Image 1 (tube, rainbow, N blue to C red):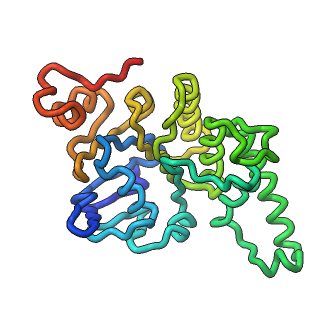
Image 2: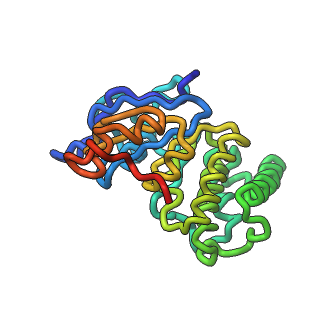
Length: 265
């Protein structure tokens, strides 16, 4: 299977702190892959390296056969990588439909001159963008809420809106940072099913950071485990669940002899 993303010996330092250390990592195309690890393991920092928010100090990141090292976040978004955030980042004073339209910006061809003079190409693109934005609202389960202000949506709907905005740029690779954080069990189950549908219906690849092991073990085809910025394990869910190094990282030294990572409710 072709890999959509490959990182080779990636290092990210903050002064004397090595947040990501010598990380080599691959994501097969059209897969759902999770990155897990204790708090402070370097997971979100690694996301920020992939999406260009942080420049890496060593190594390389290759997306679809092209190095993206040193590229800006907007350049990387245009190439086909989009993301959500651990803490929801919506335009709260804008409507849901306006939030999705804002997410389309990396893919739009028109400029301010076309908008100012209502050039035919710009008008056509704006009309098509609105149709697509409404389609995405339907897809994420927010039909009829296009005019609602983002800040007035329930928490679970805000999460879905953030995913819709990320999808608006038509990514090939979608990075989800703690998509079920703060959700109750019913919302978590719905979001887990929704993430699977994203991959199956939109034919995209998903990279996930998630603390809820029920979600990780139930949805992932491959799991990579980080601890102190280093990869300590990689494999299928069953392999990770009983891996002694992973159990030690989560539960402490000496815990691996008689434990597995708890995934039950």
